[in-house]
Image 1 (cartoon, rainbow, N blue to C red):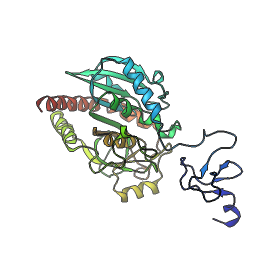
Image 2: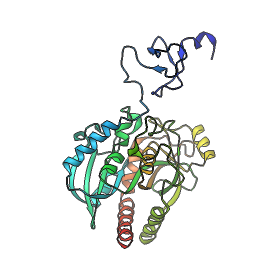
Image 3: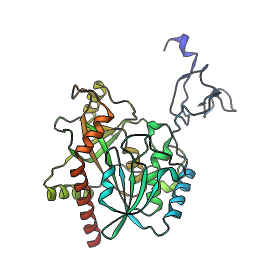
Image 4: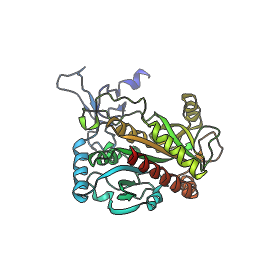
Length: 336
């Protein structure tokens, strides 16, 4: 950086906010009492508050309050499973018997979903003899509300005793054999968000301080998806999902880089929830609907309208595969 500009920037190394290198004249600088060279420098807005900055550590008190609120609304609930329905997946909830529905807006700290294709409802449902929580829509980090709404489904599920969580999303296909409408079981992921939801003071609610991530997406659950697809005679792909922060789509150069990293599909979600669920001891499975070819793989421009249109076309296989998966899961757990 040229010297004439460097003097106008402050680069914190241990700041609790992710945005680095803002001009002094636009962002206030708060130095620790120890003076220059202290251990906890931080960038914060002098006049406009912290609205433009994304806090990278969760407020677990907010999550605990939300979980208690849901427990109070569902005092007799004993869910064993949870499912988070991403963009375009919402109608999958219709395949399950709903017992009670709570809008996200009525759960403290959750807020309202801001993306088309995310209904914003928590459904306590029944499948065969097992209760499950269905989160119909998700909040994303790019919405700027922090980690709490993103972590909310896993925090609530964990507090209510859920042992298995299924995550779904819409994703762009990077690998050459993936086409729009394909369903891809996630075998592993790459966190390209630049942040981690476990950053911050350790809370034992989320498991150990340094959780192992070797096998986030459990093989037995992935195999159940394979068995379900065979029953339905509808093949599924397998692959590695990469999460970017969004909300902009990726450039062709970024997609080429992601290919070299080993990514097969790309999206803007799922990874934070998978990290939290795995760290806290849950069994995790995840499924992507490939809705478009990633930038550079196709010359077509990318849009969320295309994403929703493709998931609408894939509704039948999505619903059938999820239902068959939970049928097999119920059988497997009842016989174990």
